[in-house]
Image (cartoon, rainbow, N blue to C red; front, side, top):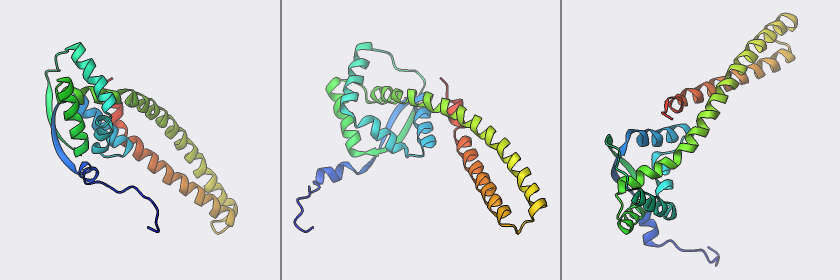
Length: 192
């Protein structure tokens, strides 16, 4: 590489990137939170879980809290298998061992960190629906103007064509926004 002193990857770094399957017993609420964030933000569940569980400092704080609360785990658990990185699994197992805390409890409490994001996204979703309603009204007015310009100028007129192109672009935007809002219905239904 032309003599540039670049850091070299180590075998352990590369091995840590490998994906593995890990099964956890989680509440339905935690499983849904992972799914909602993944679908709503358009990222893989693996990325969500890796992000939450690779932070050893946060995991350690969670482990201390779980141990201090000595809380009984929720009764209704779902066994769920996720694909995560080997590094994430190693980090989780190390913290669980060091603090004598169940892995499942660490994952469950880590997922709770997503709840403020879900609340924020739920509010944004509500506002997006307002914007969509306004856009529908705007499109109806745009169609009227387009029809009037066709009557006044004809469909071959350059002003009509520019206006038609703009209205078509708005219809495309409407379709994309509607699709996004449809995907967001999950976040509306997520229990608070």
